[in-house]
Length: 76
Image (cartoon, rainbow, N blue to C red; front, side, top):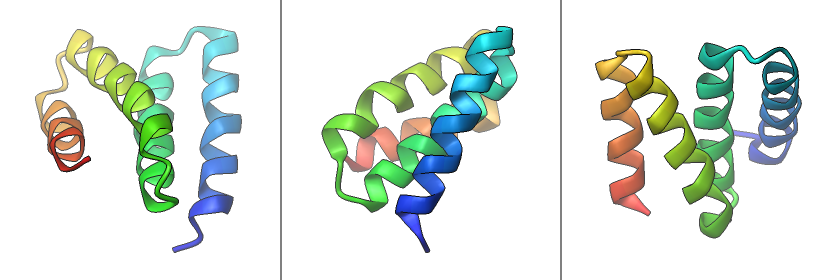
């Protein structure tokens, strides 16, 4: 997987979602960005965006995605 390219796309998506205050896309792009950072071994960068994804998914009552993020956070 091309983690560097994926990270750039998720960063751009996150910035767009933040501009329009779209919590679903903020959560999804934070999740993807965290996974990309993890793939690049940027664990210190991955934790905060995964924590934000966790908060946003939980706030939106998305237990499946909350579980995915929790699993990733436990692995890093």
